[in-house]
Length: 475
Image 1 (tube, rainbow, N blue to C red):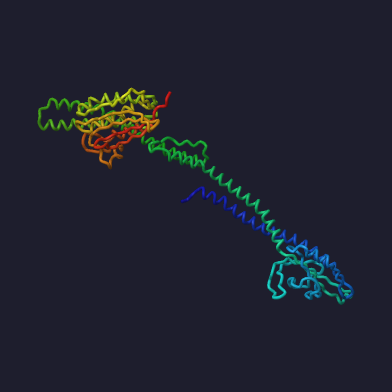
Image 2 (cartoon, rainbow, N blue to C red):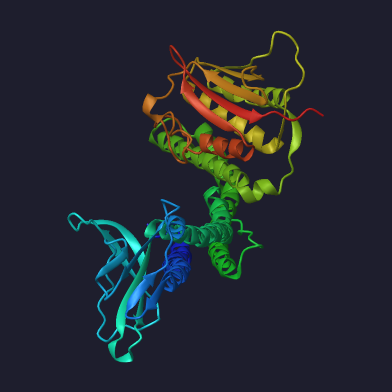
């Protein structure tokens, strides 16, 4: 996948790597040049000193090279100086026979000027290369007769081991600070890119942590100009969606309000007509009209309750400290006539010993609506002769939580639809005149109060709906 951070790091770190390689190559050449200059300086001094020990005498040479001077040159076995004197060049006179000869030159070799070159020590027995050396060669003329001048070659060589050691030390001393600087710069670039892209991560967290119905504008005041433009574009889109959704909600709410009165009138008139009409086909049709009016009135009431649970409505209502036991007891008492009509035994289960109030922070109207919907759903589908029990507790295994349960001994739910009963307009059975909004309203209300709700079957039969809410903090 395309990564903006990876691209930025690539474009920032790749030039640094190229510069580091260029610096390494430059330092390599520089270190080699300085190492050669240091070694060549000592070789030049040595070859000139040795040439001064070879003194012309007539047409011959006087070599004044005592054993002590030779011991000084060869004192260090790891870095001893090797020397050769030959006249004419190539005809050995003094020193080591296996020093490499100077490279050929197109013209006559320069006199009195040291030449430097690299070579290999030759094995006198087989001419096999042994070890690399750095050699200084000096050509001199001697003789009293200018017309019969003779040529002499003085060579001094030193092993390349110390030169390589000096070369490595120069290279390390040069490259180590440069490498540390590159690493430090890379870390700074990495941290800078991460800090520069942090607003994108904050924007992602602001968006991905939202619920689908949360259409509030995104707040990103500290973002750079480019990202602020993106956030503004997203906010404009959210505002457009919010406007459309609010229009739909207003339409549903207004339509429900407008339908309540005529539906209530239709329901009343159908009841009167049923009471006065003689038995017959007309009574059957009136009963169907009355059933449809009752179902429509229930649907309208559920739509109004659903509109009250929307985020915009909830945020406008303050949270208050509520005694959940008292609220459940009152709501259960209000539903008793409905239960008696359906021949259902409805009751509120009290604790054996009086306990302090179980309080939650919530909206009284919405929590009562949720409880009434759960109890109404149990009465509606448990069946005649069933038992419905409401219970409120503070379970010890869930500290800081309050549970409200509504249990019945009805037929329960099919195992594959336990998780679907909280979806809007989903009905677990076609019996009754429900509209599939009761438990979805309960879920909306409970989630607005930072709680959770679940439904599970009981053994041997029955259904239990459990609501969990955070307990109010002690005052």
